[in-house]
Structure formats: C-alpha cells, structure tokens
Image (cartoon, rainbow, N blue to C red):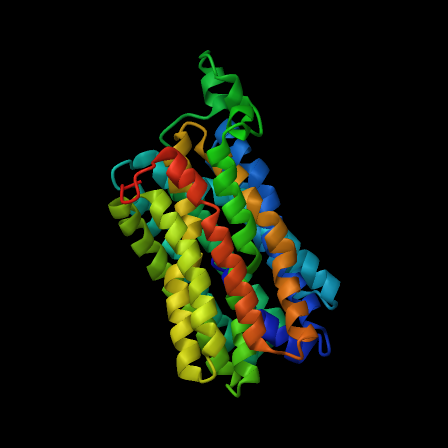
Length: 387
C-alpha cells in the first residue's frame, strides 16, 4: 500500500523524462488506475477473505504485486505503464487491503482505533521511505532498474506479511469443514441487510464524494513544487514528508478515535483535511509553506482510511468485517478513477492556476465530510457524546 503513495515521484519522472509532452490528465490517469484496481478488487476480496481466509488472498496479491513491477520495468509506452504499474499493481493491493485493514479490529475492542492506526501507519511510513528511495534510484539507475529493485523489496515484505498475519475468527470454509452452521450472509459478496441501513449509505456517500480530491496532494504536490522553482530532490522530499506525516497521523488517529469515538474522528479527519487544502495549500507560494501544508495534510487527510474499518466494526460488528470493509472501500472507485484526471483538467483549463485546484479540492473534500453527519446523529443524537 505504501508503494502506491509514492506515485507522485514517479509521475514527475515520467512527465519530465519518459513520456515527455504527456498531459497532466493522462499522466495522473496512469496512477489513478492503480487506485481503481485496488478499490474494485477490494470489494470482492473482502468477501473472499471472510470465506476462504486471509492468507490465500495475501499470497495471490503478493505474487501479482511483484509481477506487476517486473512488467512495468520493461514497459515502453504510457498505456503499458498504466496497465502494469497502474491497474495490475492496484489489483494486487486490492487483494490484500481488506485483510490487513480488518485484522487488528478482530483482536482489539477497547483500543481498536489505536491498534488499527498503528498498523496502517506502516503504509504512510513506507510511502515516505519509498519516495526518498525512488527519487535517489531514478536519478542514478533509471526507471527500469528502479522498478526491479522495488520488485525485490516487495517480494520480501509480502512474504513477511503472509507469515505474520493471523485471524481470530475461522473462515466460512473452515466452519463448513468442521460441520458447523454458517449464516447465509457470510456466503455472499454483499450484505443485503446492510444495503437497507441508511447509516451505511451515509458513510459510503462521505467516502464516495471526498475521495475525488483527497489524493490530489499525493499526485500533484511534487509537480506543484517543481513549477514553483523547487529542484527535483526538494520536490520529492515533499512527497516523502507527506507520507511520513501520514504514518504519524494514522497512528494518532487511532488514539484519538478511542478518545472521542470513531465516527467523530472520521468526520473531523475528512472535513478538516478539506479546510487544510482550502486555507493552506491555496496560499502556499513559498517552499516553507508548501512543506507546512504537506505536514498538516499528511497528519489529517489520509487518516480516514484507517478509521474506515474502525467505523465499520463500531456500526456493523466484526463477524463480516472484511466484507463490510470491502464494500466501503468500493466507494473509493469513482473518485480514484476520475478524481485526479479531473484535477489535471482543472489545472490545464485554468492556465495552470494552482489556487483554483486547491479551492476545488478542499471544497469537495469538506463537503464529503459533512455527509457522514447523518450517520453520526442518527446513531448518537447527543452533540458531545463519544461515538
């Protein structure tokens, strides 16, 4: 998951060195395919993980992960990069995401947010390390060997994940083999009862809207810095700091979700992130202010991802948690596909007016946060309740 968050460094490299002259909308689409592959696959992977166990999905996902990077290393056209480093890489991540997002919630209740936040902080820290390593390798050995080096790293990390992950509850397949009765809802790819729950649609809608712009800083911040006079290494540093801050933010989000409640934290993480884009990125003319935005947004913006599973467990229980997580992750799909290309079109159609891009991004994200308030007050009407 952390590798995908370093796409901004690769995007700048592809635009400046490999696919010169490619439009912002197209180059962001290459990376967006990764997010699309992840979210579409997560929808089915969540149910498959509940039915067959987490490890088989992690094994298949790990193999596809390494394969996609090897194929990407030998890609020579933009569409090939989109299919390999984009779509196939995303599918591999999607097979693994519901498993590692759901696992901590099975083992913790009182400190569920803290455990999940610490676990998912690894993706932010990994994204920060990946951005620094990618920038150093790309300038020295080029894109092909950089991707091959990452393929080797990913193989080792995926193997460790398969060996270390464990689940608390047996899979449907294990229960059937043991001759036990299984709730029919655990055999399906989606829960029909859940689809009748208006609180589910409130959370789903919040994710659906806000994700259209939440990834824009990850994709565009290095390019923004380059166009404001930064060197490639300083631009890559922004991406790295953004990801490191994400790791810290996700760990802290777990802690304060246990303190103020998962749904309260979920709302604030989305809404305040939108305000950060509106009030900080809009006025970030100097590198120091841009760095401040990277830190603040990293601490706040992406933490909703680690809270998704905690919110799902709090509202809908843990028995089919991977399935519910997959259904909520599916809400990311439209925004992951169209959000960043739309951002690129906004940039190009306004003569590269970055202020309008920041205003657009912040407004959409803040509006998405407001949608979760229905679920919050339907389940808990008291304004200052911990929920």
